[in-house]
Length: 246
Image (cartoon, rainbow, N blue to C red; front, side, top):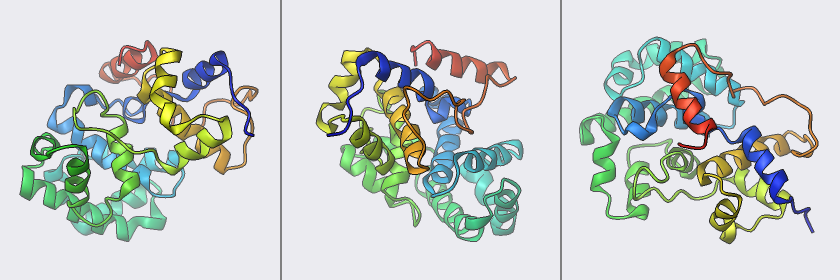
């Protein structure tokens, strides 16, 4: 039987690893603005690959610095421009294939929904249809990308009901947590379910790397979880999550 962590240990896990990826990047998904959701969609695609978190984060920052985070701007960069951005961020292993997929996916997002994911959400009949429409944007949008994207949109998009990722399941098995009782666990701990699932995903990364117990470890936060960035807007996004106000 896997060890079961007590409430205090689980809360410590959430405090340590639970900052949502979108908040860590300073992306205000709560605003539901086209530009912010487009940023998070791009980041979700980068994080979905089996690549180190810090590499995906650095690559996203490269796109952001060059103002290539909306559908129109990503498509406008062209294939060679995207490969250059990916390489600059260290995404070398998947640069050609990712450039192909970014052009296809964001090109379809622009053509079908004017680049606005809110319009795609409005067109979906239910959570299952939302996943189908997202995957229908093109090659490269699979279960993991959709789960990462929708995990941070729980409670924001009414049809966002993300499935568990393999990393979350790995962490839950290790910690003795039941998939069917995950929401009840979040309520019992009085933590945001997005923060709980994000903590599980990050702990899953540690497990995959062969690292040890989340409760006893004295290691610093893993790469990719930044300190408060200099920009006031990003500080506000992160502060809301750290205070649990999401």
